[in-house]
Amino acid sequence: MTGESKKIKIISIFGTRPEAIKMAPVIRELKSCPDVDSRVVVTAQHREMLDQVLAAFNIKPDYDLEIMRPGQDLFDVTVAVLKGLKGILEVERPDLVLVQGDTTTTFTGALAAFYCQIPVGHIEAGLRTYQKYAPFPEEMNRVLTTRIADIHFPPTDRSRDALLKEGIDSDIIFVTGNPVIDALYQALEQPFHLDPEISRAFRDNKRVILLTTHRRENLGAPLQDVYMALREVLLAHPDVAVVFPVHKNPAVRSEVTSVLQGVERVYLTEPLDYLPFINVMKRAYLVLTDSGGIQEEAPALGKPVLVLREVTERPEAAAFGTARLIGTDRCKVEDEVNRLLDDEGAYLEMANAANPYGDGRAASRIIQAIYCYFGLREAPADFSPAEKSIVP
Ligand code: UD1
Ligand code: UDP
Image (cartoon, rainbow, N blue to C red):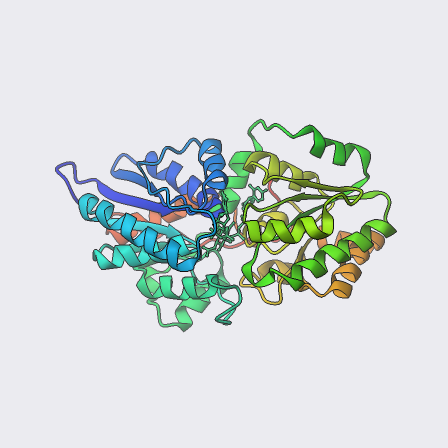
């Protein structure tokens, strides 16, 4: 602890849209702790997609590294984050750095703190596919962040067990649930504005499929296959539409336009702001995605989710029955989507509202665990999912 006031100084570092969404409830809770001095550093690995989350949760960063450049690669991002954080961490000397998830900002944030010998807390720790290149580079970012971290906040028992197997001491592991569910609880209460074009998709069609894609390992043929499969699905189902907010990554955009631009009942949009996005998800019939965070949110909203990946570090929702891992093979995607559209029994079985990822109190467990780490409070009770738990 530093300073005359003996406050615990905590710096939260993040840079992309999903990190911001999952950090927001934690930052809100930290701000309300009288004995915590909370600072926020954004790397801005993402720019527009980050800024809309900062606005939605009213977060005003203390530092903004502004590192996003068009077309930069993993080396560029890594170097820019490390260099940017050096001066800040050397001057601020926090008692703890918090990072979240598996992006390049996550890993390099942890590495920068390590170079300054500052303890690191890792939110959403212990997710694993055990495949070095899937997802790439996220799997290795997580493993390396675990090696550096001093406190680990796995969301579920499974992620806790992965950490234990890697030799992490149980005293510094706290099963908290995922703050993505806290964010969802908070955000669903807020007013939102829906673009008229998207409203039209819901008005003019009976069932809407929400689609998002951005994984690096899916670029090229896998994404083309998924989009072709959806064209076939739409031809066979005149009552169905696809709403597709397209990720800002130009590599994703070029894949999308070549197959889906101008296709009837495909509503391509810019990335939606978080509040409209979750409300679209709430109204959608089913979700098709290769996203990590959306795999967690959809089950919490009782929406069947088909996961466009060969492996996932989030198998809990499949075990609970609300998600299916279907990969990107064209015939397989078409069959799986058709099954949910045509077989009501199969659909209802998946839409069974089981949510393994949180109860809306992850942030408060994380804060209590931090106090525990500094010897100021008892450890929080571990999160454990209810049999049926849908966000109201
Ligand atoms: C990154 C993360 C990924 C995470 C995803 C969430 C890494 C290596 N990848 O992937 O783990 O799942 O974010 O969305 O950390 N861009 C913009 N505006 C934005 C955001 C991105 O123009 O607001 C463009 C930029 O040209 C940028 C490119 O998208 O260079 C790719 O962004 P980058 O952060 O490198 O990778 P993502 O695919 O977004
Ligand atoms: N999201 C959003 N607008 C969109 C698509 C996604 O606000 O158009 C949110 C979504 O609710 C989730 C997060 O962004 O919380 C997921 O981000 P993304 O899929 O980019 O990254 P990942 O979770 O795969 O790392």
